Every structure is written in structure tokens, then in C-alpha cells.
Amino acid sequence: MGGGLFNFLLVWMLVLALLCYCHKIGKLVDKGTTRLFAILPVICIFLLLPLDISIFNLRALSSFFLSWLASFKLLLFALDQGPLSPRPPLSLPLFIALACLPITIRQNPPPNFQELVTVNGNQDLEKLVNGEDNDTPSQELPKKGRISTPLKYFIKFLLLVSFGYLYTKEEYIHSKIILPVYVIHIYIGLEFILAMVGTLARAFLRVELEPQFDEPYLASSLQDFWGKRWNLMVTSVLRPAVFNPVKSIFSRFMTKKWTPLPAAMASFLVSGIMHELIFYHIGRRKPTWEVTGFFLLHGVCLTIEIVIKRELNCSWGLPRVVAAPLVVGFVVATAVWLFMPTVVRCKIDVEARMEIIAFINSVKGVYIYLKNVL
Image 1 (cartoon, rainbow, N blue to C red):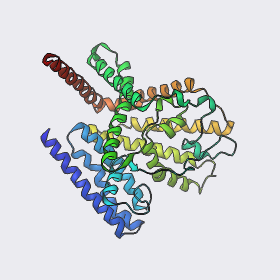
Image 2 (cartoon, rainbow, N blue to C red):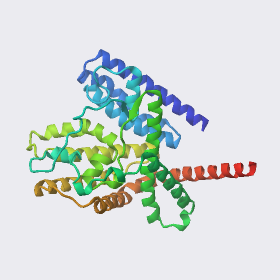
Image 3 (tube, rainbow, N blue to C red):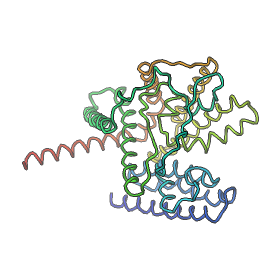
Image 4 (cartoon, helix red, strand yellow):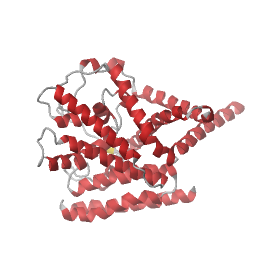
């Protein structure tokens, strides 16, 4: 373990040095091809660095932060776009934090920051793809009915503890029950990890964690799920890095009405490939492309959903109490089919279960010790 931690620290010392280099390049070299070629070697290194980390959890987090977030943000920075290119330029500490962590500078958005969109015949299809359409009144969740944030985290913590108990009895439970449980486990675990990162960032850098999830289990459609509720931080990076350029390319061959569709499919494809890379870092096994198939399937289904809404001029939808279980059920079922086999093959589920069980055992040990002492 000690050697693994030392290696982890060496990797991140190199990351800090490379980000200092990129910050300096941003001051010396104008945006465009020259800056891109100067930063491209750093992006390539970030795609490989997680392989040098031996500790499972640290390798997984570093893969997400470096190979996905930092690489895409630096690519946008080379073109003078994205969160690393505000005006005035960022200080070095903020540049480093924003480059490799899921955070954004604390700021108060202007009153018109969010454009209100209505579903009508003149609605821009791009807003549908990006998930910017409003829910119908029947789907709105009253503020009085919303659960407070501390209570939501407490409930999710209890769920993790319950999952840990299930894992200890795994030999008595069918795998078709364990796998859906682990899909939910992944979501809750990510929320807790990112909440901790946000707390540290808030305390030391006065920056806020970018919204990562917005109660995806309440999604009223696939569009709502992927556009407004799931992994919003990655969506905010993919939009300028993939969606907008692909849309611009296809605008030469297609009408504006339909260009967002191939752009959305390209975004899902890139997301799938990046997931394959992260799983390769974690499990060090060659990809079988099932995960990419999962994202392409959802891209196709989302495209069909958008086309139907557009062509039928839908201004209504199923009540959330009906739509949410259908959407979440489809996501979980397809994840068990296409996503989870890679998780199992890389033994991510085994590692996570062992950590949950170890945590429960440590809590039991503390309880027994306190009981004996008192």
C-alpha cells in the first residue's frame, strides 16, 4: 500500500508540473494550431498516466479526472474555449483545480442565465437534444414535496449500508438481483465521492462543485435523464468539444432542423469510447465494446424520442410518477445487459463490495469496542 501511495503521489506531481506548463503556454501562445500542438503531448500523457497507479480506487478516480475531464478541458483550452479560458485569465491555482477536478468558479448567474423554452412547432431541435425542454405541469415536482439535501444523503447512506448487508449474503442471492443493486450502488457512490471533492474545493479554493446529478431517478424521459439529470459535468464538456463541432460539420450537408441528431450520436459515441478507456485503466483488460454499445443504443433511442416529439409536436407527457419508473427501468435494464458485464469482467463490483463490507466490519468493530469500554 505504501509503495502504491508513493507512486500515486509521483503521478500527481507530474500532473501538477504539466498543468503549470499548460498555464504558461496559454500566456505565451495564441489560441489555434500552435497552442494545440504544444498542449497535445500533455493530453496524450494524461490518457496514459492512470495506468501507472496501482491502487484500485485511486486509479479509477485519476482516470476519470485526468483522461476525461482534464484532457477535454485542455483540448478546449487550446482553442480558447471551455472553463479554462475565461476573461480575465485564471490564476495558476484555479487553473490547476479547474483542469483536473469537477469544479467551477463560484459565481452568481445573471437572471436570464437559463432560457425558458416551450414545446411548440418552432422549437429548436438542439434544445431538445440538450434536454432543455420544460416538463409539463403534470410532471413538475412541487417544492414542498422535495426532500432536503441532508436527508437525501442520509437515505442514500442507509441504502449503501443495506447493499453492504446484501453483499455479505451474496451466495444466497441471485445475480439478477445483485447486478441491478450494483447499478444503483455506482450512482450513489459517485454522488458521495463528488460531494466530498466539492466540500474540499469549497473549503480551500472557494470554488463550487459542478452539478453532477440532479435526481436522475425522477427523469420523465431519456432526454430529461441524459440532458438534465445524469453526469451534467461531462455533458457540459462534451457539448463544446463534440456536439457543437459535429453539428457545424453536418450543417454543410443537412438542414439546421436535423443537424443536432448526428451531433448527439457523436457525443454518445465519444462518451462510450471514453468509458471504454476508463474501464481499460481500471481493469487493464482489452475492451469488448459492450459499453460503447450501451451508449449508442441510448443515443439511438434518444434520437427516436426527439424525432417523435418533433414530428407530433408533443406538448404533453406522462405524469412523472408513471414516466420515471419506465425511464429508470429502461436505463437499469440496458445497463445490466451491456454495461455491467464490463464492470464484472474488470472486477470493479468485487472491489466495491469488499470496501463496503470492510466499512461495515470496521463500524461493527468500533461499536463493540465502545460497548466494552463503556
